Length: 139
Ligand SMILES: [Cu+2]
Image 1 (cartoon, rainbow, N blue to C red):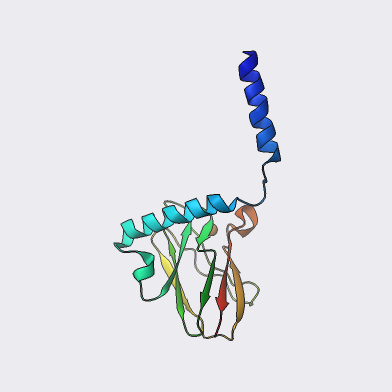
Image 2 (image 1 turned 60 degrees about the horizontal axis):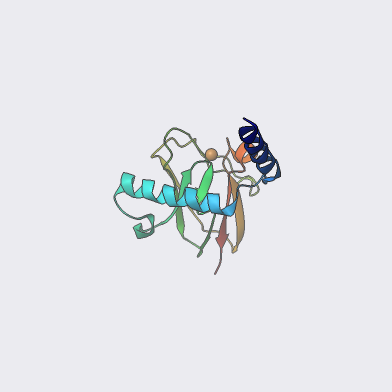
């Protein structure tokens, strides 16, 4: 009994000192690996084989979180989650939030924009789960 208690104590301390706000990069990488598997299962090919740039939405994460594209590139966001809806919202650029995308739904945006960084959010999850992403337009 004493052993069990001290183990619980150790786990508690580990939980307390673990960074709470930001998810570890390793966890994000695992989530994105699963998101890609899920994409392939749903759409029958790797997301890299599409003729547009794909960003998957999965487990409160944009995968990849950051993409660099040339001007005029089309980026397509695809929800590969099981039940959660997500959105894209280029709030800083003064754009309106996209429709809520349910699993297997998608939205696209053509980046006919000057070179620069375009951060965006998921409307329902940016505050609670830090679900954010960035498109960098580079010449
Ligand atoms: Cu979301």
